[in-house]
Amino acid sequence: MRNRLLYLCRYLPWLALLLVVDAVSALLLWLSEAEAFGALIPLIMLGTVLLFSVTALVLSRVEQKRENAFRAFLNNPDLINEENLIRSVSASDRENVRLLGTVLREKDAVCSRAKASAEDYEEYVEAWAHETKTPLSLLTMVLDNQGDEIPAPAAFKLEYVRSRLQEYISQILYYARLKGGRKDYLFEQVDLNDCIGEVLEDYSLLLKEKNFRITVQVSEFSAFTDRRGMSFLLGQIISNAVKYSDSRKSQPELAISLEQLETEDVLHICDNGVGVKECDFPYIFEKGFTGDPADAGMKATGMGLYLSRKMADDLGLGLEARSQSGRGFEMSIRFPRL
Image 1 (cartoon, rainbow, N blue to C red):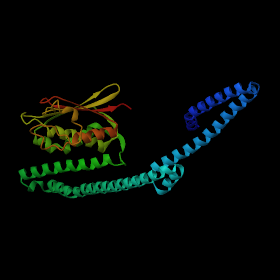
Image 2: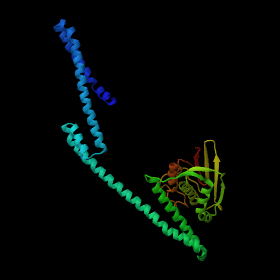
Image 3: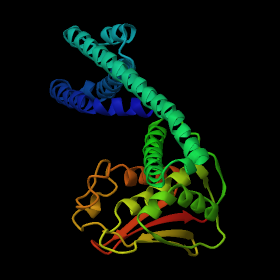
Image 4: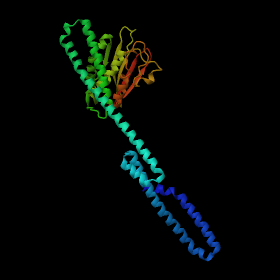
């Protein structure tokens, strides 16, 4: 109904023109035969209004039908919708509609092939990552069962390689998970201390290699979140702290604490590493951005904090960073109170 009123409003100038013509005709009638003027002028005005209403109604239905056909054609530019649109347009526009249909169908075909190619590539990457876990698990089993038979320096290097491979594979899998249309999150009450302990255990070798002093001051706290996603988020932040530790300091530090506020709980993860330069800070969550620290730039992939932000958004958590160049880095995870 609203669309019809809009169509009718478009023809109001024509109604005004007809009324002006009627007024001129009435003036001429009055000048020629004044006695018949009073009887004929109401009939003339009424006939004009009725003729305009019928004409405008018919034209509005035609235009609405053309608009519906055009929208259907844009949503699905197949031959059927193209013919429906051609029947509703003028002869001069039919060739343009056919050309538009050909172009749109070619574009749809290109998009479909690109989408299928992207899906195949994503499936291949996920399959590759899962297959890589098999030799990685074998390496872990060898180190666990026969670690005493391997020389300590070699065992340490193998364990280091295993930890780094595990991190990169996790990044690939979670990147695919974040980009996928379906996400298998399981939201439940997760003990934050247990989650932090498991992540610190996973990164224990890297932390020991850099001689980190770790402080955890987190009271009993349970968050309603996805456990795997939370572990991945914490792992990326801790990995970032290890990666950007300051080699000039004798003992790097990692401090984890919980601040409980009225409306939210905030987990702070702080280190005393190289920090982030002021000019780089606005871009730390951008994909592929690595900054320019001299002793860590070659090790970074620029994906850790990017994936951390994406995961926090998916889990409904706030993620904030604070840093000063040369004075460390702090990441805060905000848990809203339910």
